[in-house]
Amino acid sequence: MYPKIRLEEEGHRVLIVGGHPKGMKYTGKYGYPVISDMNVDELTVDQVDALILPGGFAPDYMRRNSKMLDLIVQLNSLKKPIAAICHGPWMLCSARLPDGKPVVSGRQ
Image 1: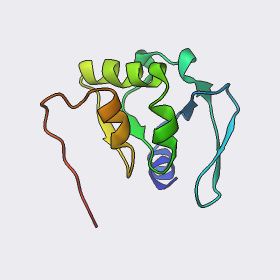
Image 2 (image 1 turned 135 degrees about the horizontal axis):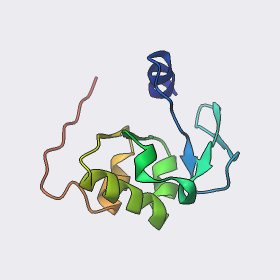
Image 3 (image 1 turned 60 degrees about the vertical axis):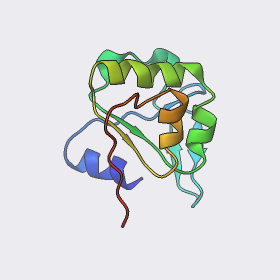
Image 4 (image 1 turned 90 degrees about the vertical axis):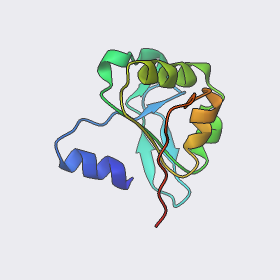
């Protein structure tokens, strides 16, 4: 939740996109709920300036959704920033990225 909150504090509009209908409640491993703003079918790459792939169990479910993987591939081809937290890189692997491009990883 922290990246979402920090981006909103800086004035960015953050969309929660899921594989289920708009308004779906997703609960993180620590019990924090988040409600989706839209289904991935409704999203176009023009609506996205950057993508943050969440951590936890979410990527394991989202990487099974071909529309989610298509979105990642399209954003990558447009050279839009893509960040992946914790298990988020699973989605990059499932989308067959980074395809020879450099990837930066950090650990605290």
